[in-house]
Image (cartoon, rainbow, N blue to C red; front, side, top):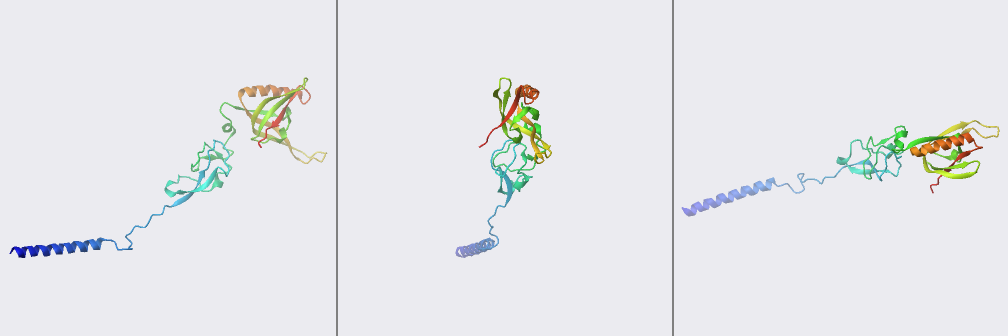
Amino acid sequence: MAKRSNLILLLVSLVLALIATLVIIKTLPKAGGSNIAAPVTATTSPVVVVTQNIPALTVITSADVQVQQVPAGSVEHGALTDPSQVIGQYASTGWVTGQQVIQGMYETAAQANIANTVPVGDVTFTIPNSALAGSDYLVLPGDKIDLLFYGQPSATASTVMSNLKVLYVDHVQAAAGADTQPAGSSGADSLTVIVTPQQAQQLAKLVSTAIVGNGTSPGNLHVLIQGTK
């Protein structure tokens, strides 16, 4: 009787083992089947990225930005995809290398008004053409100039101010003259420069002297354009 019971238990065990084996085989994915997960390929998007640190209110050039492929999940809202959208515009704030360029980080020349281009503590001063001599007609906005005062009657000349940044140049149009001079710009009508309040006071006195002199006496302000090469 015991032998028969043992045989029955052995048969039951074999049947259960067979069933378990069949279940496992059925649940395993087939070789090469669709249940094998395919490798995930990360998608990227082209984004305009800053290539070098840029101070606020700087004109953006092609050297300052470039297009880079950025993971789609890392693209910031409003990010630009075309560098031409920002080249020639002004940085609203300081830019950092690697930063994505988004809407609101730049502004047009009209938006970058005069007050925003003058450092805190400095002021603007406009030197009228009637007080100027020398190379004033060649000056362009952004140039750095020195001012030399030539005074009478001692006929002495001295540099009174150096490294002044020209913010604005006002030009006047001249009509064609009898000497066959064609119509066109007659040069700078006035120069607006960035100075300290103390320099502005000094310039006011010098301009007054130069205008009174009117080219004869007691003096003139000569513009010296600084070289960049």
